[in-house]
Image (tube, rainbow, N blue to C red; front, side, top):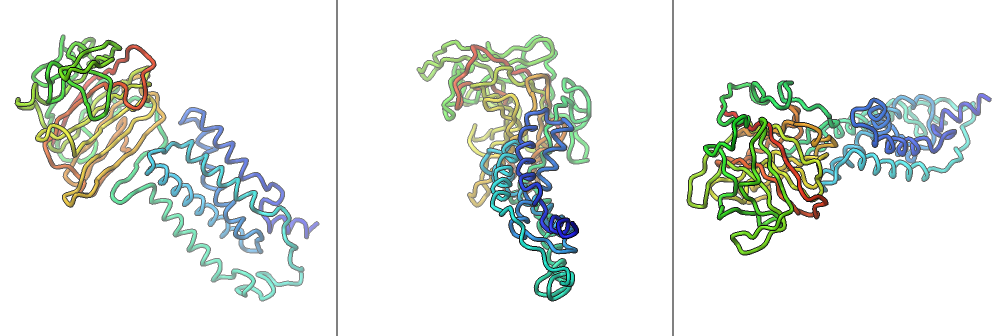
Length: 438
């Protein structure tokens, strides 16, 4: 009996060889539960921090010797964390990141590693052998102090790598588990503005604020088209299906509403667009006019409720350069591309040397159509931080990537980008929009 128990201790998982793999598929199943649910958090965290590394270590070292338990356990956790970070970063760069996808990839990997290990453990050493193998502690057959030291060092390095998170250069994903809270940065209801923006502690002053409590759109602050307005407009570069018209923009009951309607409209370019939609901008009434407001740096935020039917809809809250009336750089505070459960946060630009300066993070799942949520960016000379409901979700700190040009602010409801709509109408609601500067 003592030899049997010793064999089991030396070969973790020999009694339950498929336990790590099974844990992965259980964790994948519970990702269907609400994001903040304790069962989901516990199951997914337990799997990600133990099972992939345990399976990998078991492949490399199918037999453990006395004294190796703690060092091997630490190594397994470190390997798990490193694998989780690697998979997360890969999916993030491919713009395919979701928690469920990370768990799925690691569940498949863990299963493959588990099945790669032969089920029969090797014969245990004879009882007469000293601890550490035939050559004693520190001998060639056992890890000894130096071997254990190398294991602890490897674990520390792997953990440090994992703790770096899915960062790429100076771009860092600050996203944690998705939250369903609909609070502004100061904890006020999302329909009320923050008393002060997050970010830099320096004093702020409001540069623009509109809570849409009047009886119509304030034309001193807003126009209803891009700078190339000619009896309406569209964004031809995205191959969208809408023509923007002022009648699709309304202000009532303390909210700005942009409405997209399946109604054919002939644009000034002679083309017929199957949808008519709405947008607002702080830009120009026409190409030769002056923009109403432009901003260089500051905290830009809005309380937004995404469309209930999101298929084929592309609402966006963003900034584009005023001088060139479009192009790069572009700061996307929030984009909802055919989804009301995921929001895209983006920077598109180029460095002074002509290199691409792009950043992207998709955050969710959250039901952004159920109520108002606050989306903002703190745009500073030395960095940009994106916020969702007051929590930082993405940060860029490379000075060469930070725009330093005056930009116009826009909110629009585009239609038909990448997917065909499944409804005949959709609405984007905005409770307030604000810009604060130092």
